[in-house]
Length: 301
Image 1: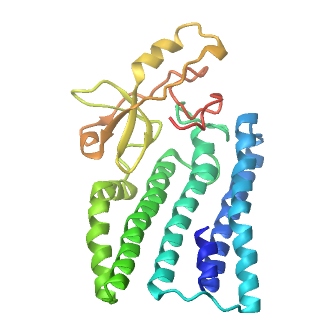
Image 2 (image 1 turned 120 degrees about the vertical axis):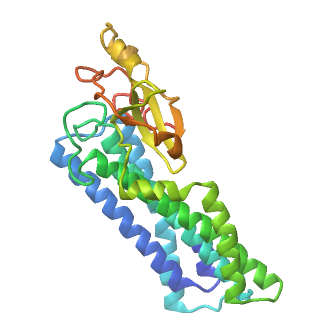
């Protein structure tokens, strides 16, 4: 809708370019996902296949109308409605924010989650094996999981701050690059601080905590790295699930962990590598919510 609004307000070239760029990313991620699935000789189970259709359908629904409308406007050159320049610029800025967040979600869906869930064969909760394709190691996957979320968060925070600056300077007739920059810098930096982007940036350069690995400290028992986020790292106690592996549990009776404990990046500093988790070597015991054997694995935790 934002790109449609930008087109109607006279920014058809911008809308066409941004929609085209998002479409290229969407196709690229889908292509990599399809290629990796073919190479692994895997097929998506019904609960993933249904959602794949919905994700692809959402992309077409969001992008095709913009591409068609923007192309029509550029070809026919109708007169746009009269609006203040800052309105058009603010709408375009928010559209960039929305596009960045959407592309980040596609990166999660097509590249991160298939590996986290074990759809491509290797699983993070098992000692042997690395994910095929790209990202091709659990360390690399952890790094890219951080990176794409950091980029999306950075664009989100500073983009909305810039949009506020554009509106504020326009309403006060104080339109100036300095006013807009000040809004973006002050409000954006405050938002970035609250989201703890900087500690996550350091993890991109050298991930200390890797998804699927086990860690411990003097004050904490062995912890399995469940997933990572900008705000911190999610862990699950490893011993409980290793004990469960020794019990006889029917396949349809597996209870998957969906409430991990979160540690901030500063709290995780004290952790050191521990003996690898081996509870899921022979069968799934539920330590990984994202496991493709879990029919609810793509629901929000």
